[in-house]
Length: 363
Image (tube, rainbow, N blue to C red; front, side, top):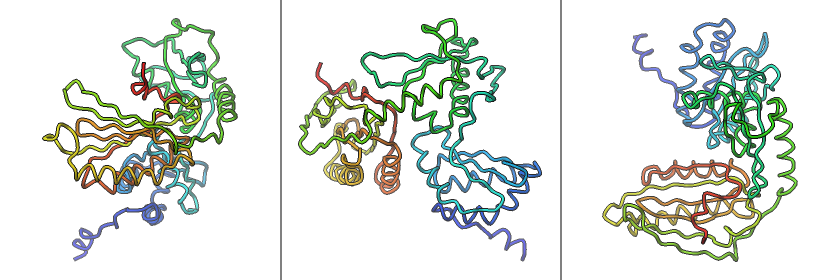
C-alpha cells in the first residue's frame, strides 16, 4: 500500500510565481544540504528545479552555490535573452525571505580585475582583451564597440565571440551586458583600426555614454494621434502579396533614439487558399488582438506603434519602445491567451535608429 501511495503522489503543478516559491520552501532544506555538502547537485536539486521552472514558463536558467558559510545563493537568469528578463526579475521580486538563502535576479557584475574565463584553451581576461569605440556619423547615439582577441580566426570565430559575450556577462552583469551596448564586433588584435583601450575601462566608457544618452532623451514622448499612415502593397519573391500599413510621420521623426527598443509581435495563421492573406474570421481576430495590444502599449507611456505587415500567413505588428520589459509581458500574455487559435511569437531587440524599418522609407 505504501508503494502505491508513493507512486500516486504528485506535486501540484506550478502555475504562478507563488506556486513555485511554495514548492521551493517545501524542499529548500534538502536543496541547501546538497549544496553545502557538495553532493550530487544535479540529481538532487537542478533536475527538479529545472522541471518546476519550465512548468512556470520556459526560458529560466539558474546558478547555485554557497554565498558564504551559512548562506546558499540561487541566481535565476535569462541567459541574456531580453524577452525573459522581466519574468526573472518578477519571480525574484516575489521570492519570500528564506533563512539560509540569497535569491538573486540575473548574473551580477563581478568586475574586470579578477574576472577571467577559459573555454577550449582560449582565455578571456583583461590580459587578452582590448576594445575601441566606433564613431558612426549617421548614428551618433549608437554605442558601437569592437573587442579584440589575439587568437581570433575564421575557424574559431564562434567560440571566441561566445567567450567574449560570456566574459562581458560576468564582468558587466547580465542586464548591463545586453541592454547598454548597441553593436559589438570582434576582430583579431592585429586587425584593429583604432587605438586599443584596456578592457577594464569599458565600464567607465559605457557609463559615460549611457549618461549622455539619458540626459538627451529622458522623458521624450511622441503623440501619434495626428500622424499620417501609408499603405504599401508589394509582391514577395514567392509571388504572394504583401500588405503593410505604416506610420510614415513617425518614421521621419528626428528623435528615434529616444525609443531604442523594437518589439515585434508575430501571429501565424492558416490560409493557403487565400494567397497568404487572412480570411474574414481570422482578419477580425487579428484586429481584436491588435486592439488589445494597443490598449496596453500606449504612446504616452513610451510605446509607439509603427505599423503592421501582413503576408504569407503572417501578421507582424511593430512597436518602438523606451523599455523592453512591458512589451515582453504583454506579448507573452497574448501568446498564452491565443495559443489555441494562432501560432504567436515575438522578438525584442535594440535598434536606436529603427534601421529595420528603412524598407518602408521612400528612396
